[in-house]
Image (cartoon, rainbow, N blue to C red; front, side):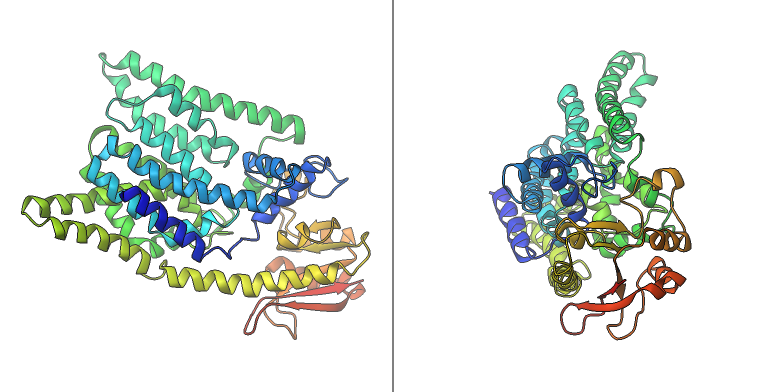
Length: 476
């Protein structure tokens, strides 16, 4: 019953936030639609092969959906919502063998009570699909008996195809679970066998992916890794998550202390994401998308603490208060700012009205130009995906093979490269609709470049009232 109520709650939150679809999701859609159309693994039809996405499995599934006549972004959103429901069920179904029946039931409820978790379910990216795989594999090996090795290894083998950091998660979980057994003669052989299977199958999966990547693109790392790694500011991503989820983080830390043995493996993926967040570029990270893959496991750790409190109340004959405690914990997640339902809903509504509204206006204008028109843009999601197949220059060069040779390019050099490409239209985002006030250093450099004298403002695309995000379209 608890799982059913929790799943219904998650679906209800998804329905409330259903209007959201992040701009980055359209990058994967563009690649998927080009692949389904027979153009290959390209950003621009007829252009060079390039891997500007970091989720090859999702792109493949979207391409299949598009080839079958279904909407690629809709397919991604359905996968996200279904994965969210599966996480809610999985936290109870597998979590009870790790932390006990009561804590697992509470964890199922807490997992569903996260508005950011529901937001990224409908956001169009691979976030919740990764959460499902990480949760399933980790809870299997965290069982007291070690779980089914082959099943867990097969699940973990999907991670490299969903996120670049996938193998790192597997490595830490396997090391934490099996290395201690190597130091005891009685368990050494079992630990070695388990470690080789649990780590070996995902490693082979990664090697297969790298072989395909090398054959298709001629490189071993997707552009996003080269672009984002080491490009952020210290603890920006982590501090944002802690600021929005301080309560479950505190409870999760206490939960790790209360757990013993293999059950502590539940915390291993979170450790990977905490360390991986240091110095990472804070992009497409509204309401801590970066940490959403470990949310079900953090909810499980939090539930251990809430469950201890509930058990204490039950032993004193206060069962009603125990239920109240569990419900109160969930309601705190739903209603505690800044990650409460109202704040998340209002934020996504502003995003859709303002940024997406401006992008849709830009698409409408671009569609009035000849099909041979080329344009350059920084927010290279919705506009390139829906501009009618026009040739696109990515101002950040995330979707260009060049970044494999140069690495991350400074803003001034990007501006020079963009002007060398001589696109017919420059699309620059501005905080002001009357006078250009660029959002990004790269756009300011493009606007200040001598080549800008060849362009004249042709259209200003704006969203709703009070919006401070506008797209200025300059035409040659």
